[in-house]
Length: 68
Image 1: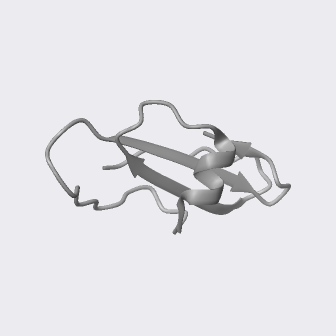
Image 2 (image 1 turned 135 degrees about the horizontal axis):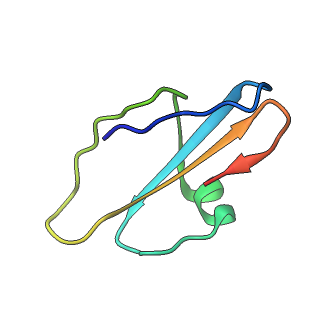
């Protein structure tokens, strides 16, 4: 999986992911239950089982602003 990163000039600070079978998750849920990951532009994931999976992704910049 890969994505394009855009920076608002403050710099990327952290990123979190949550991979599950729930279509919509709140930002608070992703931050609490998710896994902190490197702020790169790609990641390899392995799914635990067949079915429909959703990748929830949130980044935080150095000013503390988040974007999902």
